[in-house]
Amino acid sequence: MRDTWPLLDKIPFPAIRRGTLQTLQVNVGYRCNQSCVHCHVNAGPNRTEEMEAATADVVLAFLEKRRIATLDITGGAPELNANFRRLVTAARDMGVKVMDRHNLTVQEQPGQEDLPEFLADNQVEIVASMPCYLQDNVDRQRGKGVYDGSVRALKRLNALGYGREGSGLTLNLVYNPLGPSLPPPQAELEADYKRILGERFGIAFNNLFTLANMPIQRFGAILMSQGQFETYLDTLLHAHRDENLDGVMCRTLLSVDWRGYTYDCDFNQMLDLPLTHRAKRTHLSELLEHDIAGNSIRVAGHCFGCTAGQGSSCGGALKEAAE
Ligand code: SF4
Ligand code: SF4
Image (cartoon, rainbow, N blue to C red; front, side, top):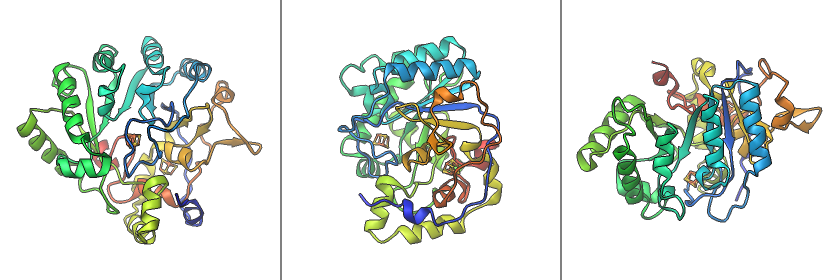
């Protein structure tokens, strides 16, 4: 796979600094039951990187010590990690809000039969990928049969109250474009998703987040092999809006990898741009007593994926998400 970092590193991006830390985003491993073409993690069934119990203990100690409001668990398919459920229940016992970056089809993996009930019992907020309401587009990006599996999973979640008014169980969907273009306006697309998924399947959800694809890892390599890397970067650069700089997720989020090393965001994790101290990687255990507010953020050309157009953060379009 061709690496896009040498090209991204040459592109300057405005300097930004960290604010108050609110969210710990923990990548518990790169194993996934899917191998989507746009995956910025390059996740798949054969990846062996997995967070161990001792690292999960550090995560829990950090949540408690630094009084973090939100634990955002990602992967791969995070639910496949042996420590996933322990992280969720221990964080919830501390009163921490927990988000699960959920690919929906993992519900049909062996041993995950009770996953929807577990998530509901712990009031975990679900952020689920659903890159289109049309079968062909979903299966092309995420693999054959993923659309049908996702619909079944969404129905299961709805049956438990997820996405239903007054249930207190939040189900958000994530859209990202199929190719090298910016996402359409979030509010309009959300209305289309609600209408079509509602009419066809009776599916309900709370919000749709639209995210731009990052020109890194699998998607970046595809862009390069198809000669579209420069054009896509140009699209992102020309759509950059300074006002999006305040809302980028790295200001309030710290990303942790499966070994416990820290990064400004999950994208920097995938580009292997760690937080460092005296030229050494910073482990989460070293930040138990140390506040990183005010530190500068490691930026480069890929960051335009967060500030182009309506902007993209973990919570979707920046402007509309703030409204
Ligand atoms: S995009 Fe998500 S579901 Fe698809 S391979 Fe990557 S981690 Fe797995
Ligand atoms: S990719 Fe986005 S979230 Fe990550 S450092 Fe750049 S601006 Fe921040």
